[in-house]
Length: 304
Length: 304
Image (cartoon, rainbow over all chains, first blue to last red; front, top):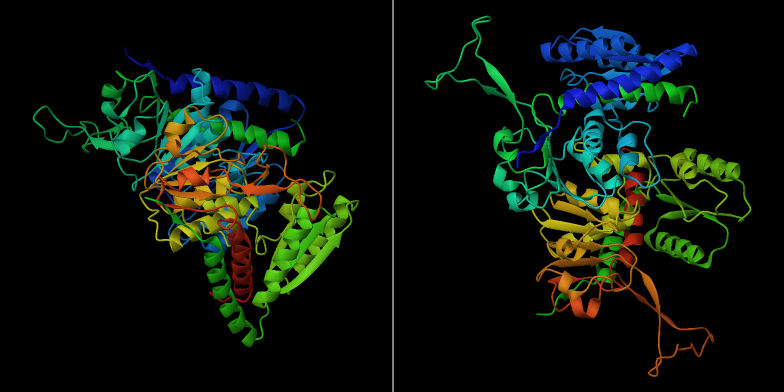
């Protein structure tokens, strides 16, 4: 049986559409949700992420407040900006694009983001509340929340399932584990020190892979009928038929392709459902960021 | 093979002795660590816990600042007290004895405790940091920290082990899971919704039971050679030989005994090491509270 291929673009479009409808209603009441982006330096990948986020805002009727600071900016200046945005009533979400330059202390910048505007969900207080019973954080981190949204929209049963999370990063592995736990899965968190990893992973009804190792999860590691969510985004060289590196005719640069942490072609013959890379979890991140910004705007105006 | 019986009293005494030595050194520098206790109402169990904590302070040279409020106190009054203690330089730790009366909102009271004095480690920001890479909380919750201390002192290898935590409470299950994860165990968190629990528990090299069900963990659920830490404290009736309830000659009341979540007598024949109840994890909680108060005092004076 070939797995259902989970169409992350379609799910993300549905989420964005839901957000757009709600934003339209808010605007009719005179409330305009606002997202501030903070970009330090000019990393091409960071610039393209920020651009995509701003485009999503424009499409959904969310006002964006772009802030671009030079690579050489001081810690104090970034902090002053974040404090200003935290105090600005028009701003309902603050997105500090990571990574920051090395001379900036990421932790203290992120801690300065008002927890009422922490749409990335990375503030320790939001992470703590994510795990604690009876403590709902205002924001769950976008990519982990996107993983749950995908599982829900394809009708996976999370409660009572065995969930295995590969990876324990602050951005994906830890928060997605806490979200799955909150939804009553029995959660196992694996990482580089895990022994006999294959046998642990094989117990998963729901497998979330987020370790950044291309095609690491092979078909023999997957329980037949499992739901496989691949958060990995790895760049691999494209090879010519003779095994040499393929070169782009347009750019003259080596050609690369994106692959996930899961050996998609083989695992899709075993799993019940699987996300492709690209086009699986990827599109969900921005969709959930928009949803979080909407949530921030509603909370700021006391709308539940 | 009969398991090593882990002597929590002895380990707790060793920890308290270490703390006492450090407190003596601090006092020689003119620094007196201080712990404030807040007791609302007159629950006999809460009163005896607070008394035990104050006695431990006295024994170790830590100054205690007792605060007792009537059951009928208002939310605002408790909050005002906690705010005053948070601002008091002599106070390095604030312990709000739980549970609070029902008309008091526990969450907002605990959130008012300065995170620099949150010796219970229950503030969401401390819980979040517990799970996050590169984010060390100032305080880990006392009982979970005591579990790790016991494992360390008996020489258990945590890194690379399979750890199973039974229970996901804010006070024990969740934080002990995060601590074990931080020590590179492969952690599985089980709870009331876990299916086929016995087979999951049987995978544990390290088993932490914290579900509050007397003698729930039976010998067949335990992997031979496992380390079993029993956090459960359950009260069972003592029966006469004829099966009737035994009555205390002294008090005339029904006799009870404390048992853990683990069937101690049977499991000790399977495990490598096991904590008894009482006398296992129990004594560690106050010892770790004293250690946290010392830590708070050192941090307040910039001593690492």
